[in-house]
Length: 250
Length: 304
Ligand SMILES: Nc1ncnc2c1ncn2[C@@H]1O[C@H](COP(=O)(O)OP(=O)(O)OP(=O)(O)O)[C@@H](O)[C@H]1O
Ligand SMILES: [Mg+2]
Image (cartoon, rainbow over all chains, first blue to last red; front, side):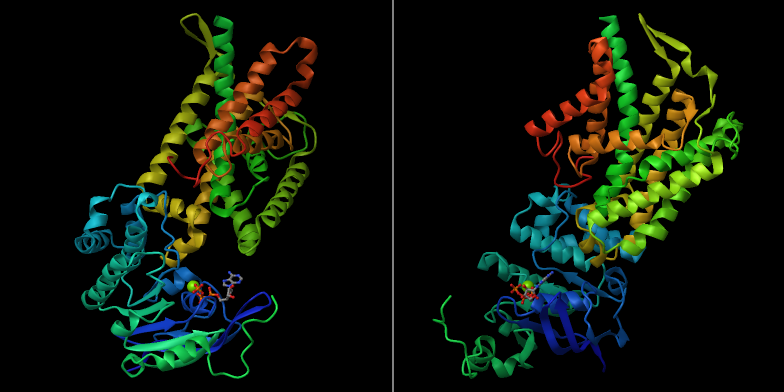
């Protein structure tokens, strides 16, 4: 069985800043894979690159065996991949329903999209109650739910989710993970999720990549990494010599 | 009192024209962050398409001589094609460019169109009589209103309603509003950026085509720079209304129409020559009081 997504030694930079160096990762059909790493590690850049939002200057990205380099984001989306970006990027002046409809247009089949929306709304009662609201008036948790539901409206095979827990209360974060895992079953989704911390994700993920300084520091099955020591090591880089002294003059 | 009402109607008719021009400009600004100086020249093209290309002083009607149910769509179609060509040849290759670069590119488009018109039609202004019934007065109570003003107002209302319905009710309209708010996110969801932008150019072309007809009927003359002052006032309208809000563009258009007409009517005669200076003075005052415009918006298509 081939990988659904293969990232093959990509390098990404923004002007002079190199955000990813020789990053490789792969996600197989049906897996839940998580990328964790501190601020500025390059997690968002990795997901954005896969979704066609930023072009690597070296390396290759394949979705279902086909290279997506040079494709525009809307073309990548048509390969069955959907991104829930960091900060949710809800269309705040559109209604909740319109936000969902945007996701559905890609199907080109109104009836199917409408049926999808109804099925999804059964999972998101809070959104169902607020269909005619401007989406900008939703709470942070509701907006995150909407962002997930909207992405699922495109009927992706692979859902890329960038820090779904950002700025949300623990109870809400639990709900969101519950829904993501539920959707994974119902919609046969493969999940690639970014998080800053490993707490929750170790429970849910099949495999984990730890990213720091634009490089993959560690990868492996979540089951092998549960004790946390290896992750802490990769995440913070302790023990790597030489480490810049923390009390260096500012 | 009657005189004031008469002036008010003039103001609304002039404001309608500015509002239609400002809508065309505002639409592209909303989605592309393009300040399209060539919009005025789109209007010029629509106007010149009415007559036979030649350097003669007296214009002979070409499309302008056709029956209006054919003429109006034809003029709009020509302007739409020009707008789409401008997008395909100039703005599409510049998709990743910054807003100032796009604006400078639109200057280039503007000059190319003006010089093209100059080559095909010569530099002398031409008189055209598109519709002699335009100035027939319609009596409303004690008011005498020229037919053309009523038509201008009606056309403006129809176009605004149609645009609103398009943006609210159609799939492409909703995609356009989404793209105007967050272009990249819309693309991630599969919205075809170039298609949506193309539709925005086409709509702005239709608006420019209609304005070219209304304006030419009213002024009765053509010149290769005729669109420039219209575009200029439309930019002012867009800024006064609130950069990036379509409702603002319309409100701004009517506000500018009102200011210009009232200054024309009530300034002492010796100051009338400086009407536009006073008008722009007003605009600066307005912006000092409300820097974000009359209808500051979080999104271009908010409350459309
Ligand atoms: N659009 C951009 N332009 C310039 N630099 C950028 C841009 N986006 C990210 N960067 C830089 O690239 C590096 C990696 O950023 P990225 O957002 O991918 O990290 P991240 O792991 O997602 O961090 P966080 O946990 O804070 O979201 C950082 O140094 C960041 O400042
Ligand atoms: Mg990030």
